[in-house]
Length: 154
Figure 1 (cartoon, one colour):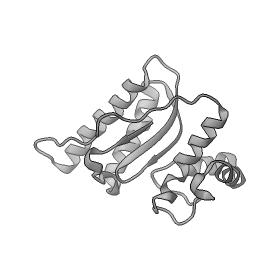
Figure 2 (cartoon, rainbow, N blue to C red):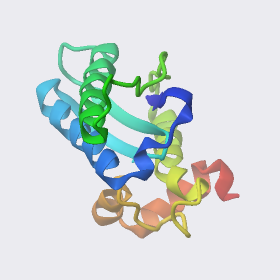
Figure 3 (tube, rainbow, N blue to C red):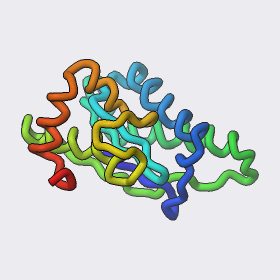
Figure 4 (cartoon, helix red, strand yellow):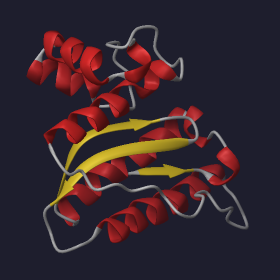
């Protein structure tokens, strides 16, 4: 899933605001019974690849993450009245097979590099879980994944 900030405002260039959003991913993972595979928080949007295991649907999960993060962002910025943080209509897609999963995984993990937030595709980015993949699966796994599925890698 992908959710974009209103008018592409780069809220998450601010480390404190990016941390608020990142915390919500993990908070709701337990509360709504889903598993995070990959995420990347960009200056004006985020990507989240997950498996929903509980009774809540993806719309409920997005609403929870976006609603609470917007409240906390507005508090952090001392916005009165509150400003709208999220654009409507987040993008969601159902993963249909392993090949599609690997393509989306590569896309999410390569996003910080594509956006110029890191120098090399395998460089760790504070607001992505690429480091977890590097630790669990190894650099060779990432090289293979990126060479097979990373469109901008070519």
